Length: 242
Image (tube, one colour):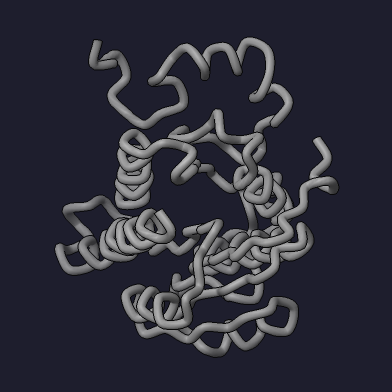
């Protein structure tokens, strides 16, 4: 599939990048921002907690917003009367490589605040405009919101960005030789497509950026998506609620 024909002439696009391990000027988040710029988004806003990486990202992107927290950022949007059309929530706390009970309550809860609470803050704000352990919880939260929200009001799609050798991955000891890494442009361009009306049939679903878009939107896969409300959703296997 070629994304060259996708254009968003009047789009406000927001990306969060507040993971303390991720550089705001590189990685998956920046690739997504760059892809929206290439698709002619009229405004790109990056939110983050570290001013240094934000200044670096500003060289290629249009807007920098220094926020002490998600509520401060959302308050700024209201004051400036900025209406967001596409919201990409990309922040993540990777946490320690230990089991939950060995991590300590404070560390685990800090991860939940980043990976779940901030998603709720932004999703709540976004819906009220003109109209890993904790990462899984965040994805489920958005899935539940999608269940109660018409796609015409707010289109919600969860997607895995693929295997990208980001600064976060390098900080964990990974190198070019550990994996057949995907290119960061893959999730970037996929995010642009996921924001289009063409992807509305995936509302509330969990997918991977590396999957073939043409196969998803046609044939057997599309038929199953249209007819099975539990396909490509997070849940308990075997318990469909029927």
